[in-house]
Image (cartoon, rainbow over all chains, first blue to last red):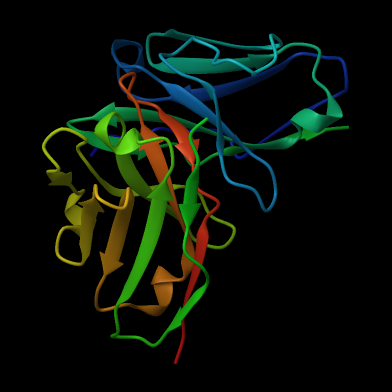
Length: 106
Length: 118
């Protein structure tokens, strides 16, 4: 079965750039979505179609995909960006989520 | 603006069933496929299945095919997720999420905590 792999944790200093990766076989051939989840809250979509930012999501969030890896980049990271981030793609009509990355801003 | 409002907390015994509802505002059932995703305590997200907005046909991953049923009631704009033969490991927050044309879960309900315990 298809799998998406994310590092469990990433740390970044405020104002710096955070890069969160998501790896899966030939992931560039699929559309990847990214979701942000803060403690006690429901997930929020921050990226769809691998690189498209929906309305209301700050411009500091961007994403790209190459080969087997999708990357969510947060430029000028703010303390409010501290959260869990999940990547997601579809394989054979099944939604697959990565295990999630906890982003710590300190 | 579309909103998904879920039913409240459930506490069930092992072997029993639970039915969680998700009411959609804005008449979105004809446009969005409502899916269900669960999250065990401290764990990641797990897709449980969804229902097509056009045909009403449900789609489940193999893991849940025998225990989960997702039904849409267009008259009340409500989608139900029923899970049978509950186990302790089914304890989780259950979310409904609206999947749009671009295959992303664009909107999420507030979540329903289901606790399975004897």
